[in-house]
Image (cartoon, rainbow, N blue to C red; front, side, top):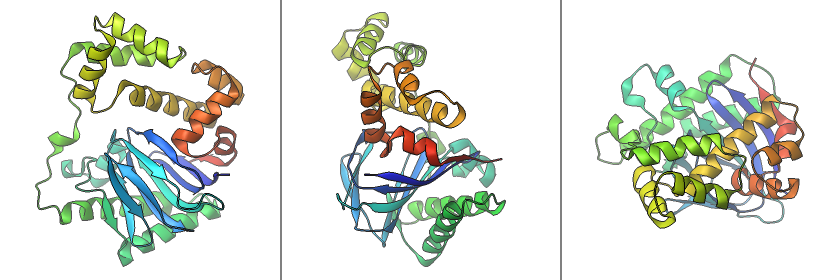
Length: 278
């Protein structure tokens, strides 16, 4: 079964070591997302419907809110990956330059000697589990190196405006507010009620939402639920069953299936290893 080897939360976002032996559904994160192969068989991701390998030679960079899925290469023993979720505001602050808004130029990250060395350092610190002032520095170096490399070969000019989501339609802005306030309702009923309250038919709502946000309402809603679940698992002592029920799931089993499909591991396993920065 897929399991978490280490999870570390801090101002930067999250840094995780996962051993994954199952596929993950299409999902998204509000953070910048970096995934690097560590051990086991090669695997793959689907990023914006494009196949992408995860090997000792190639890592993956994913922009905030960019849809992607994971396809396990070893369905028996699993493969180990370093998975980073980098908050755009932290990266911008650390870089001290508006050039470093969290938008990668391409998804491919070549495992150069410097990138590989940084991946090994971050992986070692996660496995060691010792609080250190160096962790954030290594994490920034790895993100910075990946960011610069992602733009190096594109032949394009970086544009911070392209990194910002523009919610032009006020009905979509209102619908997102409603999603955040109604997470405890069932998904099908919730999206129907939000479309109705926005004055839109369900098909028109889905079309307009995707045009404005770049995601389907289902994926956006799942992201909000996933974030809420991770926060409660990490910061509260609420039972896993209670967390699932509060998020609109009918049972712990259905909540666990959702969490595994979007995070890759069971919620109880995530809670077991999650560690907060001092």
